[in-house]
Amino acid sequence: MKRVLFLTLLLTVFSGTFSSCKKGKADFTLKGVLTDETFNTPFANAQVKLYSVPVATSQMILIGSSTTGSDGAYSFTFPRDKMEKYVLVVTKNNYFEINETVLFSSLSITEDNIRNYGTTAMSWARLVFLNTAPLASDHMRYIKQDGKSGCMECCPIAQQDYYGALDTSIYCINDANTNYSFYYWIIGTSNQGLKSAYTTPFDTVNIVLNY
Image (cartoon, rainbow, N blue to C red; front, side, top):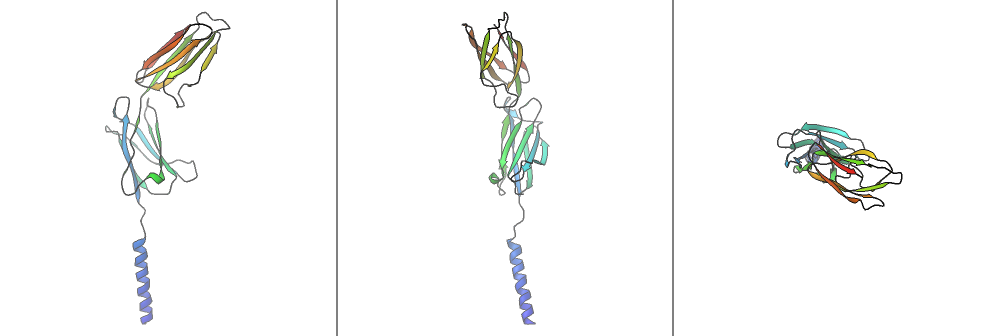
């Protein structure tokens, strides 16, 4: 009888020890403030979505979504499930998308994880090229000098060449309140120079080259 009681007591002690060492699943909190860098104001009325990406996959699983208020703040609290990374996507009409990766290994469960980001309003430069007296041998070359690059909608930064008759317009997206410019050459002539314009938010400005 005493032996049975001893074993029961021993199991109870081990059980209690195991339970006290067992950790519960903690949560991550990811939060921050988004900025409209064109107007230097909080980025209000923007849609914010947070996705998780499981290890060794490219699958994006939506964790949650929200809309920023007048302070531009966002906040997500979510379980500490083992993931490769998280992706924060922020969108708003006529603004460049924010798409930021947050690695699982960079997050803390002991304090809030602050990530502040900013974006700019869109604007456009309309490049107008017109050869007023075309010959088959005419050769016009231009290279972008100033302007947004690295986005899907951006115009190329590489040298561009056109031959013969030319009457065309090219729309190039840009960060608002910045310059867009290109340098041009009419090959075989002294006609060359810089064309530039200041692009305003949500609007299109023309940059015209007649030759």
